[in-house]
Image 1 (cartoon, one colour):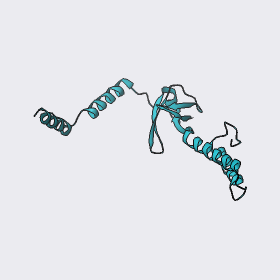
Image 2 (cartoon, one colour):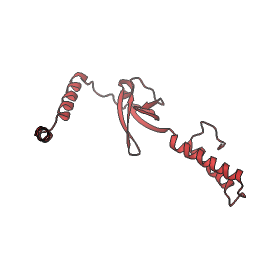
Image 3 (cartoon, rainbow, N blue to C red):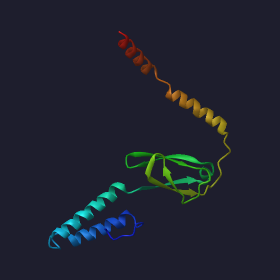
Image 4 (tube, helix red, strand yellow):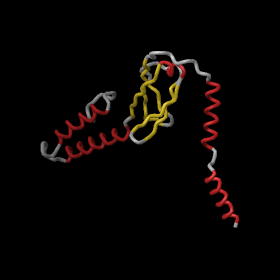
Length: 155
């Protein structure tokens, strides 16, 4: 419809759309039912591409993170995107975001200047578990509010 290769990408489709619309515009071409129909089809095609184009993001990680595997949070517009990068990933690898079929993330592995010191992940996991337990525990105010709601519903 727009005359571009399937793998040309959205910017090429948008350029082809603009050129074709200029050719078919009623100021350039006499408006006939065929030209108006073709113009409507081209507008529908670009609108479809705009709403269904895959998002392509990039993330840069260290060689150590690539070796161990890491999870990163990215932003696509206002939307937070979670990316789980598996251990042993290579630079240039494309992976999908968690729960987002239309978001592709390209991983760029940068060389470490110095290797980080050895970390005791058992201790780190214990600290993380303690933090999560403390963070997810209801505050005193929320416990009081729950108690008030419970007593009001019993009355």
